[in-house]
Image 1: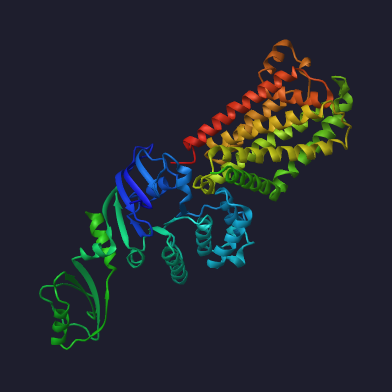
Image 2: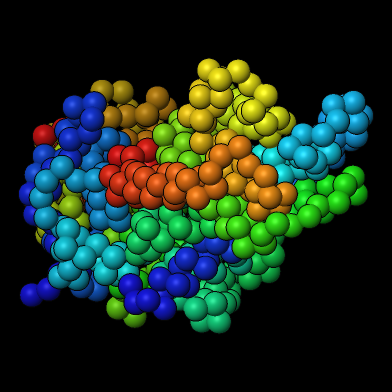
Length: 304
Length: 257
């Protein structure tokens, strides 16, 4: 089977001696929506940097759609579109020129590049800004510009490194709708993000990297099944009496005792909480997860 | 990449470079025009009249080829060094690095961009000089050949400088402390025949001397050195600098972690 991305025993040691990657193995299937998660300095950006040739690997093998980067990096690069974490376009160029110039670097003729630029700038609501210098754009617009630029050569794989950092909620939603459509049309998406709820909602498969090693690589569903503890926050219609306790559960009360946080271990019934509250005539007004489930797992895996 | 794609990539880099220096013309094209006009007026007209002839020509006529070449050298060098370093500084060089454009095309694109600015400034200075004196043209072919080769050589030099540069200071160090002294001592304002034997020999180690004299030969038909020897030296420098610049790009020096 040919994978979109196939990484084996990939190592990276920087000149400073820091070992960013300690021999990672990773496979991303064609058409996948894949999340690469990890804390700062875990090796995510190094991995992405090696994929798109911004970082030289120390050893190991990387293939993109079956093309080994050591044998034909130019061909492998054509499969990839990259949206980096930091803005990296020429801020004095117009929006239109940023996109069309990038197409030129892929050998795409001017006429085709202009057609595609119009298509993607319109899709990403930047067409009205096409003649503005890119430095004049807002943060969200700059990020969308980088997406349009990454798509101009219509890559098979789109790598998004923290694409929604600093982007407001409305824009984030529309951005994800657009990316989801791309994925449905067959583009493989690789995502790194700090918003774990995004990864939980969007991605099918996931890898968690920590200190240069892959500590988990599975489907999001399978990972969530391993979760054996969740914390729920319950808002109550009245304050709980002093010294109230819930046998078998760990409970943290707010100062006014009208909100409680309850840790529920896998196998425990939430009904027991409601029954205990009902017994003292306290009603639950609302209930929610303290954090998303993936976040709890992430913290657990990273802490080892 | 196919040949047609390589051509598109090269053309894209070149057009972007030309667009850059023409967009900021008050910083790139106007200053050399003003500086050289002052040189013509002060050194050529005011002081030149008292100096008399040099090499059989009026002093003004004698220094014009040197001043044109000085403009070409400094502008082709600084165009590439500042453009490529800026691309590094604001990370826009990554646009090229993630693309399949071969490194030799990147190097050629930037180099030809520098040549374009060097020639553009050279043409402006030449036109300005005609307001002060008339120029004979001994050999159009040699004149164009020398100016193009010189612009290529210094563009490549600027590229190597930009690769190693870590700050804007590093970009200005070479032009200020190496290029300018070499140019001033490279026979722009005088014939090395005026120097004592020892300093004449020392001057022969200065590569700029060969370019200035070969260019002057193309326009006036006089030179302190053998013109063909000058062409060989420039070509050798071009081959060495191109090979070195390409090697640095392949290694990712200063642009890849």
